[in-house]
Length: 145
Image (tube, rainbow, N blue to C red):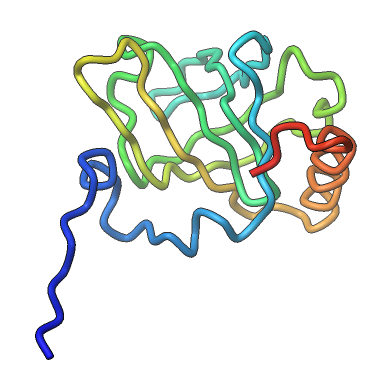
């Protein structure tokens, strides 16, 4: 029997080839709404700082959605430092956290870029605190994926 591979959607083609579907759902994830003003103050590879809007978070990492001109030079494999989270006091414990950029999705027709990051050298208790945050936020079926 011939095993034909189906083509990936355009957005999947732009993701890093090492990023598998299993990686994406290892942890429960909480999506912030478009009106939520939650930002991560990040130290970039060139030692400058930027505030990127956070789209979602899990015990494994988070996804930023900066404006295209703010993300210039960020590539898969880069190391970023999450200095602190602004706009969500329950996540204030996340400061000084090392992140690895797992994928960057940059579609020219959109003003924003998506940057998927994984927590690195992350203490287990911080992962539990994020899971507790997600559990508290999703009580009643709110935005857990």
